[in-house]
Image 1: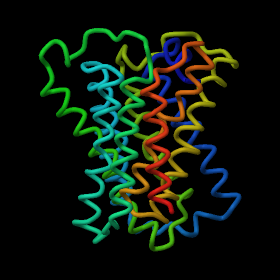
Image 2: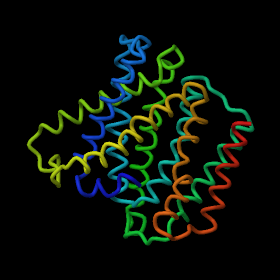
Image 3: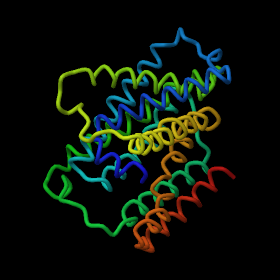
Length: 276
């Protein structure tokens, strides 16, 4: 919600570049002050490169194209596929198994998240691929985005279990992504140029949601991957459509539909089942 207006003013690429560069700088300073770099096994750099490429580059590109073709609600729904994808991959490659209660809790939470997404806004959406016949391509892009984002976090889990501090892993990941984006920004392309003149206030409004998203959110999600099964961490990290409901109500003055609140209650109930 904080990012919506400055994103429209600055443009997608410049917005992303500023956020990645500033968030990586802040995380690097924090890790230096706290001495977390000692926990990083730099011989595992191919794992970090793979995580950056799969999750940040492939995942984000697929998500943005899915968003363009299918619209925000359908994209959110398709991204919820990340949890079952991560669960299957974690079982196949890491040997993680879920208890019956965890499976039921994940199913309940995912159903609630879907309800919150479908009925969380009364605003009409523009015609999307859902309505114009591009369903198959939209689903494929959403599947790629969900799988890429999930895999990008999942492949870091062995390093986290081996003792890498999650905040340091997040710093390495975000710094690598910032380096890639900075290189792309050097290309003489109109799409990588800012669409508005930068002021200190506008810069602050770009940096703040970036650090909340890339710095705080990603780091906390890596902590969750460290201490919980990957599927559990994934579904817990997918609750944003639920938490945004009261914020939307406060900002727009329009109360979400009762089914959206029911979905929120279900998702929180499913979370309780998982954690109890």
